[in-house]
Image 1 (cartoon, helix red, strand yellow):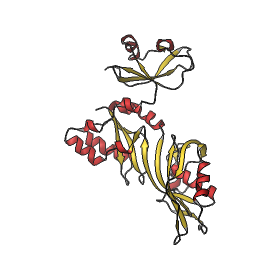
Image 2 (cartoon, helix red, strand yellow; image 1 turned 180 degrees about the horizontal axis):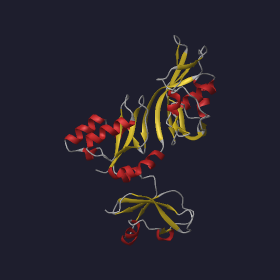
Image 3 (cartoon, helix red, strand yellow; image 1 turned 90 degrees about the vertical axis):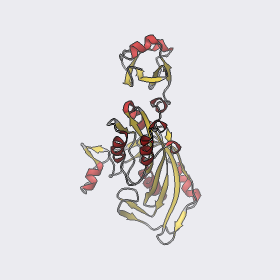
Image 4 (cartoon, helix red, strand yellow; image 1 turned 60 degrees about the vertical axis):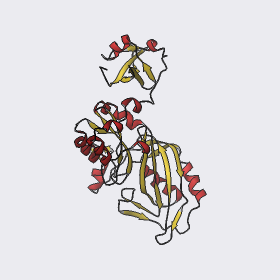
Length: 307
């Protein structure tokens, strides 16, 4: 069983919980996930199975799309609704939709984020959440994030009883973006402590909500012998990379991990990124330009050495 399973992760479960359950359901140990989702967040979680586990790192590099809610008026320890309140400021005069939109637009492009204390980023060999749980704070490394789209999708709602204001949003972003931090930073620019009060992931690793199946559905498909209906081929997950179809002679070399001349494929020295090598319509290897040897490609990841 090889491929990618676009799973719909339900709230209350960790990504590791999903992997643990799927190993039992699918009766295989070679299962991994392509991008962590917090327990309070539901949405698309690509699951790699069998040879699919070889492309986990590339799935994580793909962009993601989220839909959620931002609330102004108070911030929390975790930057989402699950944390304890750490700062409050009543929203006395509600912001206009135009004011919100204008500030959200400023976050589109390359931004710099400081990861939340409750995150898995390592500092001096320890996860940030380990420091946070121990009541310690450490200096956190700044990170760049790419925001392709960040837009309000509902009218802002003012909650008079709590003197807070909230609205729903959609964001398309690159690898390593903390949407919680995006909500907090936006709030700060608008003059208020804020937090991400809700979040759902609509797309990840090239897979979208319409393709995702629940754990219950996976179990049913296994029992009926129809699990192939839910599995997506590894090739589909790697469709973003330029495809090169190998001749029989080139395949004999590629399957043994040999360096390959750029000229064999009509490529020039300025080729960038990964190339997806196919043989008989199957992805067999990912190659990239050799960093030292001019005119040559070297294997970055061997997917299959037999077809």
